[in-house]
Image (tube, rainbow, N blue to C red; front, side, top):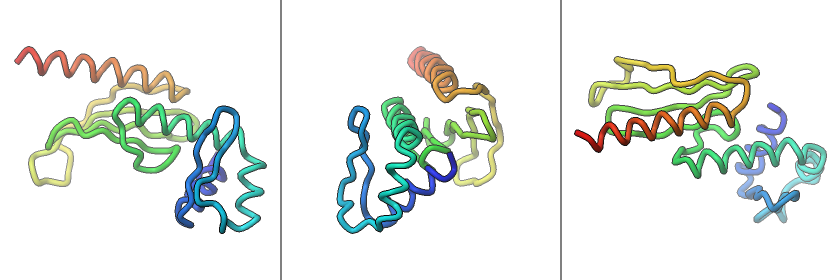
Length: 138
């Protein structure tokens, strides 16, 4: 999977973009990609499509892509953020709280740990729904 992430990152660095299109990958501005990268995209099509789909799921849930296929972040307020990260063969999600204008987290809360991104994202969505409802009551 790491090879696929480096392929996607190489495409981005060269100014092109990979777009999932059903069971295919469209390459936007890919005219000048080296043949070796284009061949790698073809060789790893399924894995790359899975990463692109995961990125899209994260975006739809309100997350920004910090590192494609690896790390997603959602800023809840000026002092709180939620992270989802691939760690070894699984996924972890947590929330960090900071004092304003401080870099070091003063509090960290584990939200979910699981083998699949879908499971962890579901748990994070449930957590965010809970937090939003709690904020609306105050």
